[in-house]
Amino acid sequence: MSLLEVKNISKRFGGLQAVKDVSFSVRPGMIKAVIGPNGAGKTTLFNLVSGFLSPDEGTVLFRDRPIHGWSTHEVAGLGLSRTFQHIKLFSHMTALENVMVGRHIRGRAGFVAGMLNLPWTQREERELRYRSLETMEFLGIARFAGIEATSLSYGQQRSVELARALAAEPALLLLDEPAAGLNMRETVDMAGLIAKVRDLGVTVLIVEHDMQLVMNISDEIVVLSYGEKIADDLPLAVQKDPHVIRVYLGEEEC
Image (cartoon, one colour):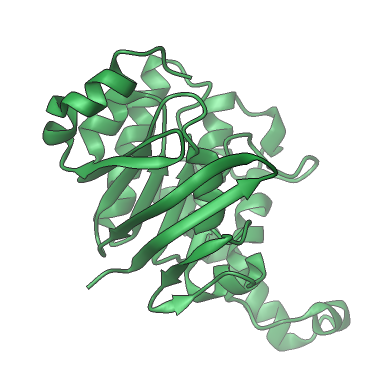
């Protein structure tokens, strides 16, 4: 049974066919990666899967429900969270407060109730804070809780963004180039965090350029070339696929 099912999706931008008839599935408890050379359509595919874009054709099913047309809030409430290639933390907020933003999807208090500062909303806020700090402790970054998020190092900010997405208690976590801008040591640490998240029971779909990271942590890999899927297999099989070697591994990474 698949947690995510992508069925024959296509997307055009004017005369550009960004994604063409792509299908794949993601089973619960796995790490699946999407790779491909520059212009392969990875970002467009990721935005289609996360609901940021609607396909021209085809369907994206999450927990057997089509999610195109849903708001990002609704998709998150269903159990799908994502990070971004370019870090989007809130400035002038601590790392913990940023993580709490992600956790609020699991709260009940609306704007009016929060403004009235009712006893039950105070209890909920304490619970949100506790659970958010618990998430940071799980990822080993609780020591940054009281520090303004944007004053942290780039690698630390990446970890805070991961914690914010994880705080929403997703069933499926979409990671958009989590190692982008990281040095070798930080990339190794990020790989360890992603594996730790998977071991927690969270399914992961990742778009990433760092081939060593992808090969080390992925259970399956989808390869795109010019918007089309050319492989969908185990990492070792992908490494040995002649088509992949010709159109991707032998070319300069983007």
